[in-house]
Image (cartoon, rainbow, N blue to C red):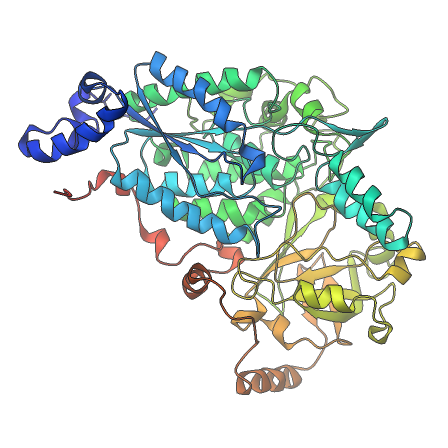
Amino acid sequence: MPQRPRRTSDQLRSRWWFDNPDHAGTTALCLERYMNYGITLEELSSGKPIIGIAQSGSDLTPCNRHHIQLVERVKAGIRAAGGVPFEFPLHPIHENVRRPTAALDRNLAYLGLVEVLHGYPLDGVLLTTGCDKTTPACLMAAATADIPAIVLSGGPMLNGWRGKDRVGSGTIVWELRKRLATGEIDYPEFLARIADSAPSVGHCNTMGTASTMNSMAEALGMSLPGSAMIPAPYKERPMVAYATGARIVEMVWEDLRPSDILTREAFENAIVVCSALGGSSNAPVHINAIARHAGIELTNDDWQRLGHDIPLLANVMPAGAYLGEEFFRAGGVPAVVHELLTAGRLHGDALTVNGQTLQANCFGQETQDEDVILRYDHPLVESAGFLNLKGNLFDSALMKTSVISEDFRRRFLSNPGDLDAFEGKVAVFDGSEDYHARIDDPALEIDEHTILVMRGAGPVGHPGGAEVVNMQPPEALIKRGIESLPCLGDGRQSGTSGSPSILNASPEAATGGGLALLESGDRIRIDLKRGEANLLISVDELAARRARLEAEGGYPYRDHQTPWQEIQRSMVEPLDRGMTLAPATKYRAIAWDLPRDNH
């Protein structure tokens, strides 16, 4: 625990609003309108901590909607511990539905939450998370404000089933779209089978971005141990909601802040745990962003250095075979952490929100099912983390190695004279619309050695960074049994995808990245041993192409459709730097620089 004295009632931040005799008029104005729906003067001004609840559940965010009910248990826990709960809405973020991409909303939700935490009389905040971007948005804001904060995940859905087969949310979409393309199934069956993957309330039951990021909140120490992967409908979920509500009140008295927890060691732990989970390819973007808001520079080189040689321990889709319910019953995140602690791969003394260290919380929490959570010495994959590739096309692009299939390895990475490397001609697409319109065009001459390239899909180009890099081959190849080709792009892909794409390429084409210089028919060499991806043309030809592009005004992309798109595009940083807003990361501990009086 930090060597900071326990707070007393007169030191509560909320007293500046609700009990400030030096500014009696302002105090009265702050009090009177809250009392018009039944909160008493004693609750507001007698020295009880005021706890904000950032409510991410809404009809627009189905993955988080059950937080509308869970919040009653949260409030009960807060009241039982002597606090006063204040619920307020978080900007809605729904991964599947929000167009042009929910990634646009992460920074917008962050900004809104920062303003609430700075400008309202809150002593602590409970962050309700679930769907992909809600977790990083909340943690980024908590790092910026630095008032006591704790994360409550809504938990994954129950397992999806079709007959005796598990059906994983998201992952099944990428599998079945190939069957639809070949005519093996029709459109109604396609929809019905995908609907099987979402049998209950909760977020994705696979280790997609939602489950990964909520597991990351636990690995970082920002949620109660064992809470991240409790399935949404389980009785333990409202129980942990109550415990989380009670804990945030005590954190206020202890003055335990995000800056005490979100340390360099915590972020290094998150990289290692994410690799062992086979976590989402979106995790580096979000973890790097949270770190930057916490004042810590984390890079994709750190992800390779710390995580690439970590073994895959979670046998969970898309890298494995099981789903969220089995993972929780096998021990969840604490069981994975136990294996990593035993192997000496984690900073066990990292502090967590319950006031204990990661070691104290998780050591001894052994796996309850070695088929689902494997032992460190007998993993599913030996080296399961990310590779950070570089070359003449970009400064950084990530490849998730835990999802490299045996078929992909055999076809592209097993040349006896050139192991873990391959070359191929490229077929270049400018955005997902161009891909869907032309992927089956015979004139592209796409064969089993072609590399599919997606550009114009980054934070500026799309805008927001679209999940479109995991492209399927043309129907003609799928019908021949070739169901995957190497994919490369400056966008993202769903964390539920099992494609070992090279993605998040930075800088993106729209800001002058090398992908803007590619032409269909060019040849690229990918070398995983050397960590390189290079266009195989001369330096002079590359320079000539760049000069032509600049003379034409740069890589073209669609105009802004909304004010926020223009604002974000004007200040957003590349994916390897977390896609943060450039001016925002300089702000630290803003809640303790109290805002000026409003009257």
